Length: 125
Image 1 (cartoon, rainbow, N blue to C red):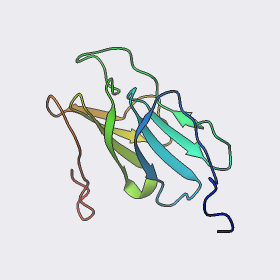
Image 2: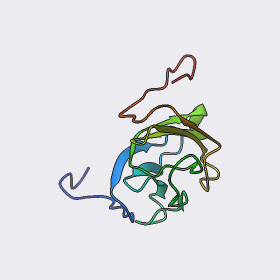
Image 3: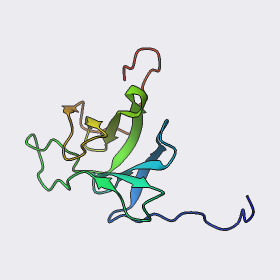
């Protein structure tokens, strides 16, 4: 690095980012989980704004599939094709990174989640 004290990239989002991951196979992609419950994807080649983001969910309760509370943990799965997120309202979602409009699957696991991990051997939570 020729200038290690200078930022190389700055990304913006409409809500504070509470979790983040680098994409395991696409080095230009960064994934973020937001305080608003949105999932965002940035591409360093495209600039500072997200190139993809999930719908901002304003529904609360059982009818809401997307997160309505801050995302506290996320893991990229299936070789970079999917994303699992957890939020403080106790919901765990599986997303296809090809389409972030709404989660493919959504499970309410309790009243609150603070973190989770995916087992590399089995892919289970």
